[in-house]
Length: 302
Image (cartoon, rainbow, N blue to C red; front, side, top):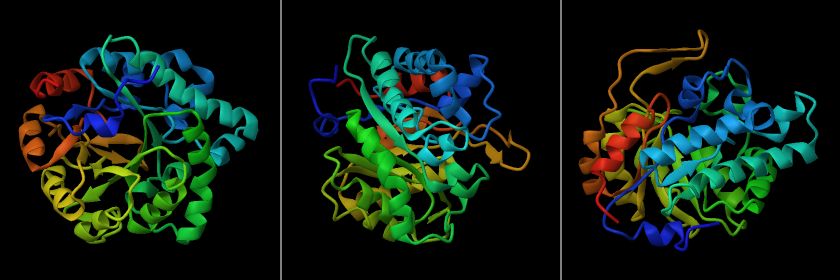
């Protein structure tokens, strides 16, 4: 059952809502092998109980928004495994159902965000950290639209257009989601003060300002220090609530398929983010339930 309030209404409260953390690292902590091009999406078919358990771990930690395991789930990706369109549609719907089941357990309002990852996630080669795939906005829209429609039919509370590396893909995603009847948040992956494709961040955020179905704009899958700077820019350029969920600070080496560097994610950043306009705050890759619990403890009562 959905929460009584819409997520947009909940964002009008005084303090930020707490997002979950990285789904993949929690699945790995549960013993799942994700060394596969489909990444966590494979478990929609092979281990749905593991996905629900991961969502439940974050809900118990205090997350108020759970993001589905559909980031890397696409019709094209599953077709490469011999899974037809009908079964793929069922798996996409399952991603929402698994998060909804976990959301109903804490006895409080928990919303479900259906993840819509970038085209680069299908390629599984780190392209989401570069963008500019050589496709037009129209071609990217055509790629995203069928999956978006299927996820929307499963009735999530919001579509999370996340880890978007450039403005061309952002434009395509905003077009593909405009007529679904489901609100969205738009979240870029960035480096410094620019998108991963090198575009000005203020201009990238401004792209969302004229779209009424966008209820939040921000960043994810980036360095925590970069997220600090981006929150205020997003708030100024759009006048919308800001969503922020950076990585741990470690970096993914796509060729070696491993993480390098030091942990820099600090839940104590939350007051700064909130003061700058963040109303949705959590973690992305390598941020686990312990740090989400610390964020939840710092969040203002709602």
